[in-house]
Structures are given as structure tokens and as C-alpha cells.
Length: 572
Image (cartoon, rainbow, N blue to C red):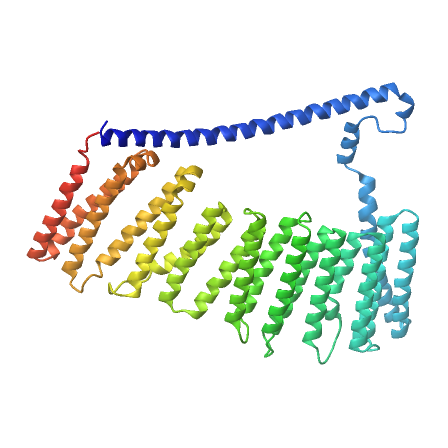
């Protein structure tokens, strides 16, 4: 047995192994589907047996069937059916409490127009209304009419807040600090009432009002620090309260409303001469710490929604660091390091953790901004290529597609900057950047080839085509910058294209390549470039270059073409 036969057998065995791996992967998928179907069928059988057993028990004990539901199916059907009584219990009190408050407003208007209700009487009436609503609401809850009672309790909080606002803003009986403190006390009392009665909706109603308390205070010398401190403390307190009580809607509503209020405030302040960039950064940093702490403490409570909040707040934190008055780069670098450490800690627990992907993305984003702020374009492009290439490689090694996508965004930005940068000289930073582009892409592509091929052969083919396109563009740009002589540059471009075509055809003829590209796609690409080169030779170079360059060009292209032709006569 000679070496060629041995090599051929090895290649055949390798091809058989690849085929067996693909077959094994398909069989595993089919087995998983069958297991899932069997589990579902078994669950249906168990459910039917349970129903049948309940029916038999009811038949055996007819005296108990009057009190208990006949079978579980009817109970489920009843739960899913439209319950008009339940709907009226929930929504009618809410609708008519609003109508009643409108009636109170019109009564106020009529009394004021008639001169009966003086300002002090109006305030007394508002306080009595709040007390009356609270008393009636408490009685309704004790009478087992909780939906109606909770609505009345919420109306009492709204009435006392509006009364305090009127006493301060309209009639100036209460100064701004006292009005602010009173409104805060009313909000705290409302949350306490919601806590006693275990009502999430009452807590939401009171909490939403709490965020707008500062807007109900009219101060000639507003203190921005008091506003920011109050909103931040209220947000953090409500987040902890909602997480402790497992109130999903309250948790989400708290964060969303807080962002709306802060965004509105920062938009208004941006038109003034006051700079609050440092304070903004501190607020988002505190919120980020709270969100992360609560996330790792309880991963079962609206996990995906809180991940979204963490990611959104992290982006806002990074943007706030960009606009810091001093130390912007240091803050961004510190954020990148912290997020990288969090990524490492999370990866030690679970390599596929979504939290690790979010931390990884925030670390990459922060570092990318540091690069853009601190370095010139040439160095910036190099660092983007290195950062993105390393991130993509790490994603492939961890088999985490989110990290691959995140690194791909950074790397794509570096590729774009590289391609739009012209090459004027071979001994330049631009030339080195283009070489680095090809090197990083090739290293990532070929070191992760087995992982890509086993997961998706089509995916590997797409990345390989992108690599071939980038290589063709880079060779063309390099060939056009060899010298200042256009004839020599044209000769160099044609020569590089022929080498490219030769390499593509040679690589496409390899047995390993043919197991991946079943239709000789790589060979076709080489042939296309070959014919493009020949077309350039006759339609462009023939009439533009000198006779000497033309002779050299035809000799070189012809020789390489003969060598390429020789590749198609390899003995099988």
C-alpha cells in the first residue's frame, strides 16, 4: 500500500465520520421529539385516569356530590368562562368612584360660584371627603366587599393629596416644604394601607401618585437635589417592596414610571445652565446595583423582564458616564471592568446564562466607547478588530450565540472602518489594519471551523464566502497602492487576482473542502475571478499599459493560467 492509497483511505474515513456525526445529530433530535411526545401522551393519559377516578368516587358517594364540584373538567370550564358578576365587582367601583369625584368637583364649582364655599371650607370639605371615603372603604372591606373597599381607600388617598395641593398651590395656606412632607406622608400611608390589605393594585395607584408629588409643590427656589433624592429613594424603596411581596406589575410599573419622570426632568433641566451629569450617573449606578442585587437574590421572579431592565439601565448608565464633567474615560473603563468581572462570575455558574450575556454586552459597549474617545481612527480600527474578534472567538468557545452576536457587532464596525480607509502606502497603518482584518477573520474562522460545521454547515459556508470577499477587496486595495506607477499597480492587481484564483481552485479541489462544499462553490469562485482577470487583461490593461508591462503581464497571467489548468488534470 503506497502513501496515496493510504491518504485516500484516511480521507474516506474522515468523510464517513462527518456523515456519521450529522446522522447522529439528526437521530438525537428525533429522539428528543419522541421523548417529548411520549411525555405529553402520558400526561393526557394520567389526566383522563384522574378524571375517571373522580367520577367513580362521586358515583360511590352521592351524598357528597351536592357540596363538591362534580368533576374537575367542569371547574376548569367554569373558571375559563366569562364571569359578569366578577367583572362588575372589579370595574363598576372604579368607574363610579371616578364619576363621584367628578360630581364633587362640580359641587365645588357650584359652591364657589354661589359664594357659599370659602377657601377654608373647601379645604375642610376635602379633608372630610378623604376621611369619609376611608371610613366607608374600611367598612366595605370588613363586609367582604374588598374590590369596592379598596377603590374607596384609593379615592381617599387621592382626595387628601388634592386637598393638600389646593391648600398649598391655590390658596397658599401651606408653605412648599410642609406641603411636600405632607404629600409624602399620604403616599407612605397609602402604601401601608395597601400592605395591610395585600392589594397590589392599590399599591400601584398610590405609587404612581407618589412619583408626581414633587410636581404638586410650587417653590420659588426649587432644590434639584431634593427632587432627585426623593425620586431615587422612592424608586428603590418600591422596587424592594415589590420584589419582597412578589408584585410583578408594581415592580415593572415602578421602573417604567421612574424612567419617564427622570427623563422628563432631565429634558427640562437640559435647557438650563445647570449641569447635573454627575448626579445622573450616580442615580443610574444606584439603580443598576439594586437591579443586579435583586436579580441574583431571586431568579424566579419575572426574570426575563428584570434582565431587560438591567440591560436598559446599563445602557443609560454608560451614556451618562460619557457626559461626565470629569473622569468620563475612567468611569467607562471602571464600568467595563466591573461588567467583565460580573460576566466571569456568572459564567462560572452557567455558561449559557442570559445575565452573563447582558454583562458581556455592556462590558463590550463600554470598552468600545473608551476606544473611540481615547484613540485616533487608525488605532481605533485596530482595537475594534481585536476586541470584536476576541469576543466572537470567546462566544464560539462558550457556544453562546448572544456573545457571538455582540462581538460580531463590534467586529463589523471595525471591518467597516477598515474598508472605508484607503491605502496610500504599503508601509502604513492602513495597510497593517487591512492585514489584521484578514488575519483575525481567518484565525476565528478556521479555529472555530469544526464547531461551526457540526452546528451548521451552511453557516460555515456563509462565513467562508464573506472571508473570500474581504480577501478579494483587500488584495485589490493593496495592489493599487504598491507604487505610484499606475502600470505597475495594474500589473500587481492582475497578479494578485490570479494568485487568488489559483488558491481558490486549489483549496476547492481538496477532499476536505469537497465534503463541506458539495457543489464545488469555491472552485466556481476561483473561476469567476480568473475570467474577471482575463477580461481586465484584454479590455483594460491592453490599451492602457506600456508594451513592456503588457508583455510581462501576459507572460505572468499565462503562466499562472497554465498552472491552474494543470490542477484540473489531477489523477483520481
